[in-house]
Length: 133
Length: 144
Image 1 (cartoon, each protein chain N blue to C red):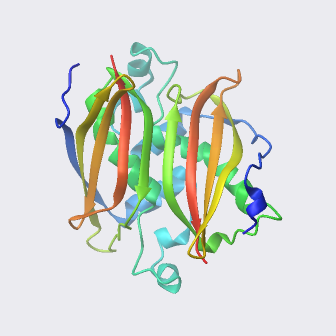
Image 2 (cartoon, rainbow over the protein chains, first blue to last red; image 1 turned 180 degrees about the horizontal axis):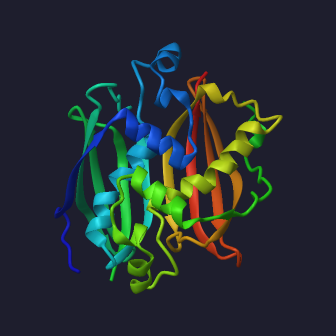
């Protein structure tokens, strides 16, 4: 599979609800109540219930995984948590992911993710290094 | 928090047996729809012993090491002030159901910045043969 720097290889929108957060809490074992209780979130000074950063990280790589199918594997994946994703009890939250080829070199291919919520980036330096077969 | 934590290596965690249904449950939670994550036959056709865990599944195994860090008696880390700053996973191979994984935590760096402390915790995860699977690196910010 041949790719060129700048190619958009995948793009996807994820609709999160409070149910998504409870599901992730159970699956991951992270039961911090700021991810499902408004009163606890507010008591520690947050504007509301937040998605787990690791949920945002986990879903953001999925468009790349789907693009790879069985033609390659993820070698390295890193993000910086720069801004929270607030998940409203009624309207939820929409997270948008664009995956673009950032570099092609001897170490493989680097895919850069742009992950946004309400038109603001929520993950910084979100990079996936993949090997393509 | 205690700056002498830098360089400390913790005892390996108890082995974590990766279950097929746990992989599927985690996959659903992170919107992973690939047949490799759900269907053992598809995973087998691609050369894997069983269903393949999504890339961030390693956090489930890493979590036990972060619990060690927060519980360290002389660590002085107030977990209610901890914010997750960065996260990284470096893989030798994907995790698959049936893996028995053990994680060993090392505190590789502690920096203070404007009253906040930044702790870098590196968890090396190996399989039952002792072969490297993935290293999970978290930077935690402990707010002043």
